[in-house]
Image 1: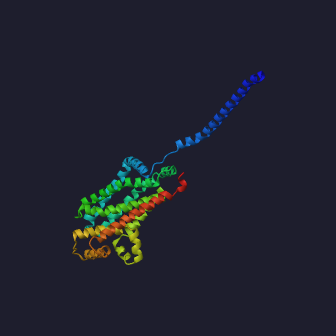
Image 2: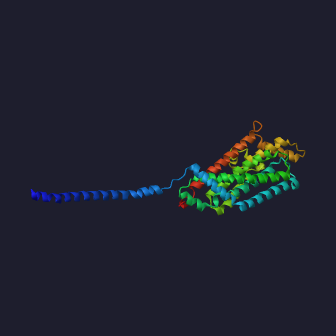
Image 3: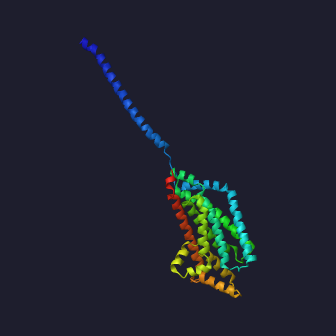
Length: 326
């Protein structure tokens, strides 16, 4: 018995040692598990929460406004070009050529000039900072918000430049039409022409943009919109559809002429002017069933053209040059 009593403390020490080793093993296993979970929690904490469409749209619009304010020097060049164009065309129409105030060719030159200059100006919207966009798009920027923010801010420039061009021409030429009626067709021209600038800037390299947009503007505004050739196009259904689909001046000149004809009610004396007025009425007012229908159809056509061009420019921005978005 005495020997057994002497052995008890030794067994207690062994049992206590086993408990300590078990506790240490549990601590080791728990530490290992916590160590294995640590990187996962750290990665979750470091994960970037990307803002949604509206939030990115607000951020990108504010950023674009800051950039817009810093482009005054570049903007001034186009302001000077538009102002000079308005003065030159007004002097030519009013004092040199002395064309009638209802002449459709006069309005063709005005709309073509505005469309040409604005489409070139809009090349800078998506063409100047393409490498920056490729890097940002690879980082998760919302392409829709990026596209919409730039288009929204650029609308300020489009409206101001259209007002500058038309107001200078209106003051020099004095077309005897209320200004708010006179400017409406030009606003639609600016909306459609800017869409061509957006589209070209997203699908071609920046160095090729001015040449391509100049060629496009010359064809769709100058050649296809000329009243003398437009009369022949209207007699062929296929050509009529194609011209109505792509030509800006086919619709905008129609608006300007109808407004001038309804407000001025011209009655030319010379035979040449009478023949020209009859030709314009046959081209622009033949299909109108009611008064104002030709103006309404022109507004719808140019709005649809501008929206379609903006949508195609978005597709070009999103899917073109995807290999460079790294």
